[in-house]
Figure 1: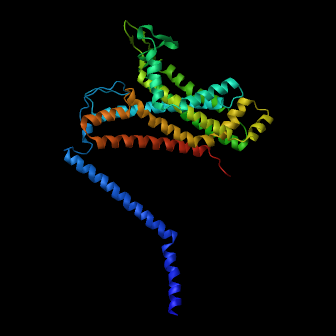
Figure 2: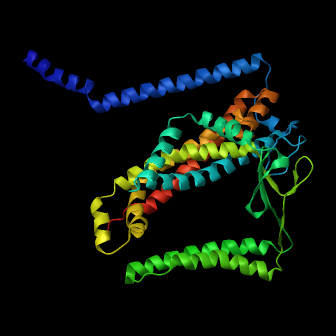
Amino acid sequence: MASQEVLREEPSRGSFINDPRVRGIFFQALVLVLLVAGVWWVTHNVIANLTRLHIASGFGFLKGRAGFDISESAIAYSSDSTYFRAILVGFINTVIVAVVGIITATIIGFIVGIGRLSHNWLIRKICTVYVEVFRNIPPLLVIFFWYSGVLAVLPPPRESINLPFGSFLNQRGFYFPRAIWGEGSWLILVALLLGIAMAWFVARKARQRQMATGQPFPVFWTSMALIVGLPLLAYALSGFPLSFEFPKQSTFNLVGGFQVRPEFLSLYLALSCYTAAFIAEIVRAGISGVSAGQTEAAAALGLRSGSILRLVVVPQAMRIVIPPLTSQYLNLTKNSSLAIAIGYPDLTATAGTVLNQTGQAVEGVVIMMAVYLALSLITSAIMNVVNARMALVER
C-alpha cells in the first residue's frame, strides 16, 4: 500500500515541476530580477563615475549661456541664449527636415512605385533603376552626393541660376521671395483654418450622405473652394496686407528674400530620395496585393485606367501600404541625425555641442533619446489613426 501511495504522489510532483504556467512565472521573475540588477549596476557605475569626476548631475545646466552660434534657426537665437534654447533650435530644425522630407518622399515614392507597374517599358525601367540605385547606397553617401557632388558644383552667387518667380540657385543655397505680413494679416490664417475645418465637415457629411442615399457630392472642388477661397476673401477684406521681398544680386552675394542653405537642401533631398526608394517598393507591393478581379470589374463598369487606379486600386492598396510606410517615416526621422556630417544644426548637432561644453554627457544623451522617442511615438500614433480609418469595417 505504501508503494502505491508513493507512486500516486510522484506524478503530482512531476506535473507541478513541468507545469507550463509555473515555468512561465519562474522565468519571467528571473528575467525581471536580472533586468533590475542590470539597471541598478549601470546606474551605480554612472553615479560613481560622475562623483569621481566631480560632475554634478541634473538639468540645471540648461539655464546657462550657450556661447555658440547656430547657422540656421527658425526662431530667434544668439550666442547669449540658453542651452535649452539651443537644443530647442535643433529640435525645430529636426522636425522641419522630417516633415518636409516625409511629404516629399511620399509623393516621389508613390509616383515611382506606380511607375514600376507601368505598361510603358521606358518608365518602368527608369523607376526600377531609381529604386535599385538609392536603395543600395548608404544614406550618408547620398547626403554627401547632394552636398559635394551636386550643390557644391553650382555656380557662384555672381553667376546664380535664375529660376521662375524671382528665385535664384547657387553654391550658397536657394533664394526665393520672402513673404512680409502686414497689419490684419492674421485674418488670412484664421480664414485658412476655418476653411480646413469646413472642408473636413463637408467631407464627413458627404460621406454619410453617400452611404445613406448613394448620391455623390463634389467634395474635392468644394474643399478647394473653401480652403483657397476663404483666405483670398480675407486677404481682400483686410486690405491686401501681404507683400513680397525679392532677392537681388549684389556685388558678391544676393541680398533680400529668403535663403535655404545648402546643408538643409542636401539633407532634405538625400533623405527624401533615399526613403522614396523604399516607399516605392512598398507601394508596388501594395498595388500588386490587390486582386486582379477588382481591376477587371472596374474596367467592366466602364472606368478608365486612371480612375480605376485612383478609385479602386489605391484605396485598397493603402490597407497594405500604411503599416510598413510607418516604419519608413520613422527611419527618415531618425536618419536626420546624419545631418551632423555636413554641419546642419539638427538636434544631434546642437545637443552634442551642449554636451561637449558642459560635460553633462548623461543628461545630453537622455535628452536626445527622449526627443527621438517622442517623435517616433507621435508619428506611430498618427499613422495608427490613419490605418484604423483605412481598415475594413465589418457590418
